Length: 162
Image (cartoon, rainbow, N blue to C red):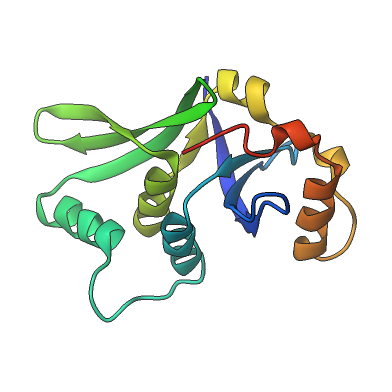
């Protein structure tokens, strides 16, 4: 059964300088870091900050298409990891029922944030990639994630791709 998570934030891998979106389990506080591209990190950060661009970006466009066609993003699911690559699904309710559409996790998260849809992570992905909350520290969010990343095994960096 997939578990609902929230986006704790976007940070940067101190080794590769690549952006990482950090998903957090509300109950346990454990996190799932996913390495993403810079453009996707920007799209997620804009959604987290509630900023709207003067013209629709790709994720905004997809939301508009869903709204205009009477479809609804039920949820997104980070469904699996294959060959160190995360795979996600969009669960869209529309004409003909529920459709499961393959997506990159970063795009799925950016769309979910815009649509207010739940972000789910499969148990298998949690088992393979979650980091216990106990690695975090007290204090500000930014300091917490910096320390969390510093405590991670260096082999975990660049282990996963979009």
